[in-house]
Length: 193
View 1 (cartoon, helix red, strand yellow):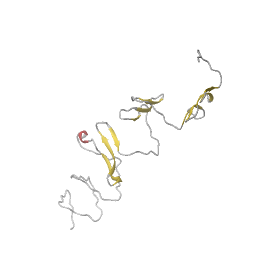
View 2 (cartoon, one colour):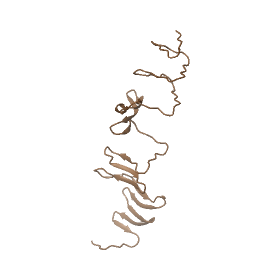
View 3 (cartoon, helix red, strand yellow):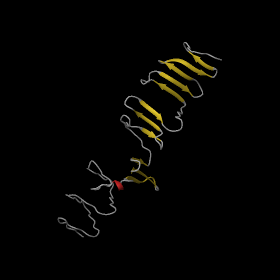
View 4 (cartoon, helix red, strand yellow):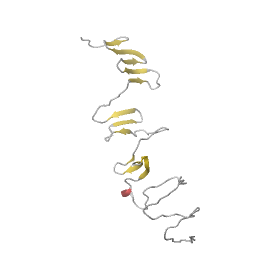
């Protein structure tokens, strides 16, 4: 039936409002689960705080995040959650960027559980650092290293073919099945063989 709400009213039991409900003050929901059954949820606030408390709620923060149920299929969700022990966010699936991913100086893009591969700019130099126990392996059909303007070759390595070294964009040393070809003068302290 109809319900009339007065100032500071308390309503018990289940009630259905068939039209709009406008709350002029703060709305506090006390319960275990809050379900919103709507097509679109529009929030005008600029910030959503999870794990909110008036005191220290850090002990409950681990695992806080957002989950999309059945994102992949009926048994696979997608989530963004907080890992308190690692002081990091955990994404359950791949990320795809359509804009620029910006990292300030000395902030590293890392891979490996032990941060084995690190890519960063230290404020002066751009660095690719292999900090793990293994090797830094580059796999490519053809490997080309050019200058920063991308206007001149420095090194070119062709799969199944030659490796070419350049000086100021000019070819100087080329490997071949029979040995090496050198353009210009070869200077050596010792030649043997």
